[in-house]
Amino acid sequence: MDQNIDSLLERAEGLAATRDFAHARQALQAAETLAPDDARAPLQLSYVESLDGRYRAAREAALRAHALRPRGDAVVQELVRRLRTFNEAGALRECMQRLPPLREVSIPLLLTFAAQLSYLNRQEEALALLDEAYRGDPDYPPTLASRGQVLTYLGRFDEAEADLMRCVRRAPELASAWWSLSRLRRQTPESNHVDAIRTQLSRPGRRAEDVALLAFALHKEFDDLGDVPAAWQALELGCRAKRSTLRYAASETRAVVDALFAAPTPAVAERDAEGPTPIFIVGMHRSGTTLLEQLLAGHPGVAALGELYDFTSRMREATDRHCRGVIDTTVVVRAGAVDFAQVGRGYLDGVAWRLEGATAFTDKLPTNFFHVGHICRALPHAKILHMRRDPMETCFSNLRELFSDANPHSYGQHELGDYHAQYRRLMAHWHARFPGRVLDVDYAGLTTHPDVEMRRVAAFCELEFTPAMLDPRGRDRGVATASAVQVREGVRARAEPKWRRYASWLEPLRTALQS
Image 1 (tube, helix red, strand yellow):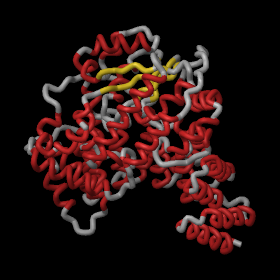
Image 2 (cartoon, one colour; image 1 turned 45 degrees about the horizontal axis):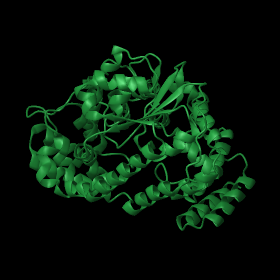
Image 3 (cartoon, helix red, strand yellow; image 1 turned 135 degrees about the vertical axis):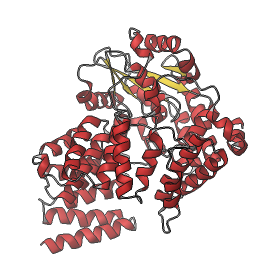
Image 4 (tube, one colour; image 1 turned 45 degrees about the vertical axis):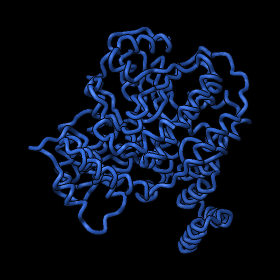
């Protein structure tokens, strides 16, 4: 029987690779019937349904696999990754509760659970698992790299650097560790990693993903050292490598924005004053959203939850559409038939476990700017803060930031400029359609006159202003964003924008933004 199951799974994988989803589905349904206690079939079916864009079926298949309580390490690892895809934090935590005592759990499984907890911004819980993995083998490079990253999110930079340095001594070929090291502090002529990173870049046969990590690390180090031409050369290399791994078409972003413009605007329900108040922080990445959230976290009644995909998940569920990114035109079109009151209830129920009595909470996924209209309808009492920053500063900061697989538009100047234009166009549209629902927060004002700007923000969010909202330093919450190091330095206004030193190479971006 096992051989039959394996054959069916292998056949389904081949069919899915050719996008024959109907026959792949049939093979996996047959496998489920043949071995109803084997979680591999529903797990593989979940992937097939996602590839076919069927969000509800994909989620249901993942939950069926969860209900089977699998125990093999490989299957459990696949399951927890899948549960994270659907933002099923409750099921993920149930999987953790099924684990034997941590000392009996394999290191790879500890690392998998730690990664998922870190994605949920539960950094202390992730660190507990990584500490156990470290006790099991203090020289295992993946543990050291993961632990260094989580310690960075927690602001424990000296400990993070010690782990990462131990990692690169053991496994100098591990590109992600060099990238993490470059970001931890400002490099100096006396202390930097330039030669070591160059050595790793020169290794033959490097994957594009590794070249991107090493080149972005080299850019950061040369930038710290003031060698602008070398920094730009490294940045160009990193952008080319990363872009080669991603699929992106500017026409798809424009099509989504056009569809949102064309969508009808039904009357928004009256505010429901009951329950905690969501505070959405939206805008371009690298526009100051993390800083604003950290300042709001100074209020005793505000839970700062970081970048959540909960609203994206609720819209995917409501429209039965699994897509890349937070939205596509199919989601927009199907949203016309969505019960937005149910979306709002599902969203609030999904985040309730995180709040711990807070009366308000922040959700700072920047790309929720695509969902502003949906948020207004689903959560009439939500507050929406829109971070605005100088376009050249924002776009250059995106260009020099290595994201995971998000923001595929950010590795080419023309694509980045075009994306920024669509973002500005859409935000103007939301202001016109939902007057008074969105407060623009100016990054320059926030960094030069934080007292004035934060009083405006507090009043808009119906919060009592407190002086603790003026300084993000000393917060003990994890910050799992690109600004994890920078935001710990407090509110600072730059004397000169970072992009000015690179102006001679940024003419395509400047032209794109002006046009």
